[in-house]
Image (cartoon, rainbow, N blue to C red; front, side, top):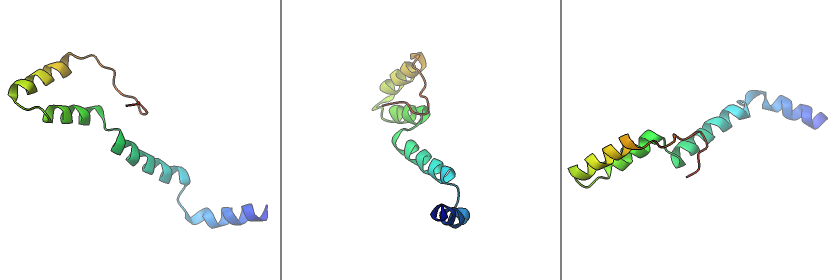
Length: 74
């Protein structure tokens, strides 16, 4: 009980763990799981010529794919 009280007193100057942990997890998620817009932009940027770019644009417009949620798998 005394140890718990001392730890609690020592942690008053520290930011809450949930805020710090949330920011770090957000950065990690963004690094490894880019947004749909970033994936689409990368897909369009990798087109070799104008015909392929037009095909990819039509493909993205036509597709009815499901948007990713916050923890969508690869």
